[in-house]
Image (tube, rainbow, N blue to C red; front, top):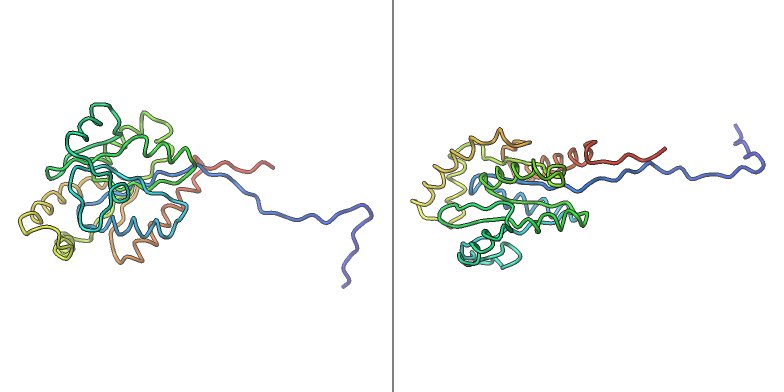
Length: 223
């Protein structure tokens, strides 16, 4: 069968798939200490170069290899308290005698620049951010919360020993605290029970993709 010739005056048009724009996400990952949230965060950032990490603040000393402004903003206790009194933190908490916090400007500046933002915080910080987001539509629209947990406390204890950063007494304190944190998983949008590193990343990417496509964050093309 021969191809029909186009009628006089007609032009061949390129068919392009419709596109839609999406609003940036604030992906919040929380987990008990030693559950692998730092590893998952690094894997996610490697797989999604369009995503940027929110750098949190802390009064704990840097661990070997950590850099100020990259891994954390390392503050002296007095300097941290000054920021608290100024109302600069969207959340802050004291865990095991060390203070941690997230600057409000750290999140909003990156979201307003159109970047997806990854935030790694403890359970206390996640609860505070959820409350604050209820009063701030910009944060509420962007926020997606994920709770990562090992399949058992025995697995968590094994990981804490392998990390080799805490003594036996400190590990037992972290395990006791972990029991309380794990009980809060129902307050998160997603529960991710840790498996292997590749599987954790696969499921995390699926969450990000699904949230990107939600109607509340997308703008459909005009026809």
